[in-house]
Length: 598
Image (tube, rainbow, N blue to C red; front, side, top):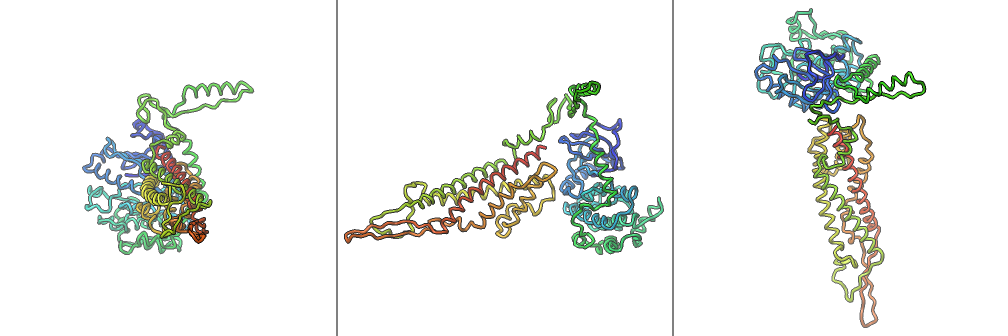
């Protein structure tokens, strides 16, 4: 039901094929199977996607649409790093459809059986590492794939990607219905687990068995259970009762594959155990494929760039440009004028429902990011105001300290009962020390609340950009700030994940603003006990008794200690930290707004 790719070549659209499905423009055919037709399409924002339509006879099956809607909703929770992410679906359409991220590359079956033969041990280890992570994402979403096979594993430069959750279903389903209720064998017999062939209720261990069969196929170039073509029952019998034939599998991989192919589900390792084994310790999937495979992938990527949009036509000005260029060829000394093309827009209605309105460019989106329609906008405004108030309070405190340090003295005719009660620092009036100190506490507490709300919201927005790829639970965006040890690394790691996920380009945006803000914040956090200390407590009063035998004057002065100057520097640091935080909030908000609108 959910697939990212059916074939390595894009075929032209046929007469009966539509021009578009929902908001997706169809560019060509990727393949056709028992479930329906798969098209290569382009989203309204220009992203390449694979759109699969479901056959009418399947859509007419009782409860199919309800089951389809449930499975697509669950599948959208699976992260897109090791799988083809489900982007959109419509189970209520005349022909139900589902759109997934397009995975540029051949299937593992095509690589091994049709092009390059078996993979070397290093590549199989990379394959095992990537498939374990993909199954982990699928199982964490409450799904069992149930049809993991080489034709459902896409081979890409970055690593393998699992596609086609066509017969996946929720783990907590209380029935054994679904596609098996019709009596049809579900799955690919050579890669099905024994319990799946017997029609038993499946667990995650069933996918582990399929994983072992896929790894054996990649390492040996053939199925671990084989039978003469057409002898389906003989093949199923061997899967259930006979040991696998692992001839040709490299010795270092034999133990891993044998454990996965255990007949009893309880004897198979769990995903967590597999990921701890040395056979799957392939953390970097950079050059994980043989050079000839990488070269073929590069060629296919170039071919994909040449794929034209059937709905793109040349404008009259572009046609004039072509004529001008033709004239330039025959007229020496005249530079040729290159033609230009623009996306075709229906005059009956554009992407946003208005006729003739072109799609917004990235520059337009960045300008929109400077407006008020941005993620967590209300909290962002509150953070800006409170950062300003905190910075202003610290700046006034610095001015007040310097004013006192300039030689301000307090003269009294009699001794004060308690020198610590001296709060009136010259002619400051209402801007005396108590007011500023309590203002710092008030504004700082309010800033903490606003910051936590804003930080949790931008983290939630980043999760939409990269589902399942952000570290830590979403609640840690709030809780992490209250753990003293975690304040040294956990909020920064969450901020890093949010920053990278929110970068609108292919490469992460430079994080100079993020790093500068964090360095200043960390310094402020570590020195916060001294910062919150009332700075008058760091002063020493100077009492001088001047008498002529008749009367005495008491001259109270303040002598600045080294700690007092440190406190003054920290208040200056708070101003810089607030400025860096405001720049970080502004930059991150702009990036998220750009990516949301793009």
